Image 1 (cartoon, rainbow, N blue to C red):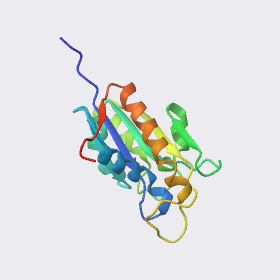
Image 2 (cartoon, rainbow, N blue to C red):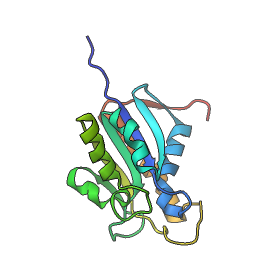
Image 3 (cartoon, rainbow, N blue to C red):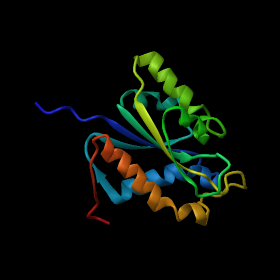
Length: 168
């Protein structure tokens, strides 16, 4: 009997009204438009929802979080964070998100007795504190293809599959 595939949640987080802070949501939107995924992969716009994300996280074996990461490096710097490095993510501390995502994941562990493995594919934003603008800055927009590649690599590494959509 074949092993059951891991359930993979690809979670784009951020506030799309604060320009580059919404990069995670924008990447997940493009992944959904450009690729079809195996049944064990779920894409989700996590926005700034915090505790509302508990059920989807609990139901997953692995979570790929796509987010802006403020770590005082040049805008456009790309990160892959896991383990203790997760604390560097905007979603985890320096954000307008309504609840710290790390706290949400810890709550999931307390409630369900399990915590999915997680990785962040992130990027240092250029503009996330200006007047509300829904467009990404050109510097960050140019990096979207690379963020998508990294997210797809993470999906494949834990047993997900995908193919370009033929209807594009």
